[in-house]
Length: 446
Ligand code: UDP
Image 1 (cartoon, helix red, strand yellow):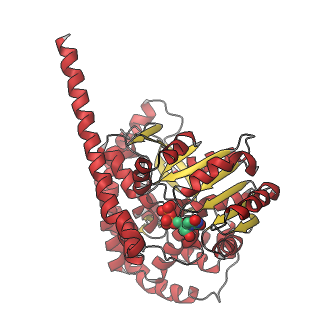
Image 2 (image 1 turned 90 degrees about the vertical axis):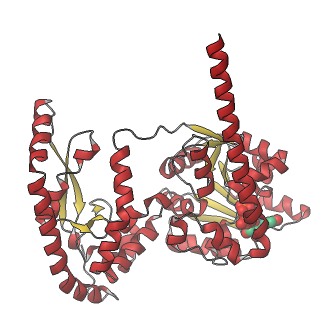
Image 3 (image 1 turned 90 degrees about the horizontal axis):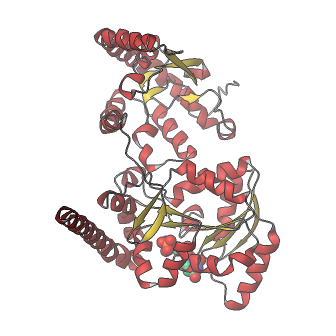
């Protein structure tokens, strides 16, 4: 790959990369050698078990990209047992393909357009990739590719022993969970019901696939996100509950919705925060050169979002923008503009329940394959409201950040709404327990 010696920060990183890596490599060598010797019986045992099971492959090789884009094969045992599968990766560390901590090792096919167009992104290959990386530690908050690269670049710029130890310690709970659930992953129902609201239970990638499929289907589809505040709103606005019932895809947004799923024993696969999903979807839309129309927020905001999309995902075609404060007279013109735009997807960011009711009432005449209600999305991507720092999102406290930003508008939603939601969830849980014990009693009497 072409090297940019003059890229800002690249030389700095290389200087640092000349000093600390000697220590880092010594630590990697010592620990991996110690572990390989300690676990040698296990290596032999798993290898022999695979041979005896007449497995076609014993060691799997995944092509990855190492330091300075040097290709290497990431090794793993060809077994279903997650506890043993990753053992051979220690050989990669011993050989120097990988470090214990570092930027994420990219797949060899992964030098995406973003990486090519963004010189800073190349910093991530200035050092040896790691088994543990910032992305892995934070993966439950669904970082998009841009954020992931930014984290890796930040890691390379500030690489130190302290940082590596910190990341390794933070990875421990994730590693334990991963090992525990390896052979018995939680069973996720395809659909969950939180206080009567149906939620399609899927990963971010599946949700994006579904939206992309909807774009290509002849039927117009309505996609919504629901967070605890929205679920509370269904109790006040029955029309909104009906709109959610009739929607084609309802996605779980927010830490609170995921927590509710845990309490109600209906595990939710992933927190599909709309603000995190948007750039990922844009990446797919860009690849497929799809057309979108943006409606919502204060005048000028949709245009700023369009600029952001054009800058980061140039393949996406923006067919039009409108603000979200049109009067009934202007509404007709907005509907006509959208219907004539030829857009593949309409993003409506006018807040809940307004946007879902609006989509439901106009979907038939909008002439778009997919309309997505996206709340305050434009406030973030137009730059009006900064997003909470990653660590705040990681601990599920983004709502506190929002409350501090707009206390006048948000206090009722969060200070009262969150507790009302939690109360309703706990009450529902008790009801479910009561119903099941009553059924058990009736069953044992019969
Ligand atoms: N909004 C709009 N038209 C309206 C009312 C609100 O476009 O008539 C916009 C508002 O400017 C803001 C968004 O809708 O950008 C609502 O943001 P909020 O964070 O409240 O979204 P929600 O939590 O309801 O999804």
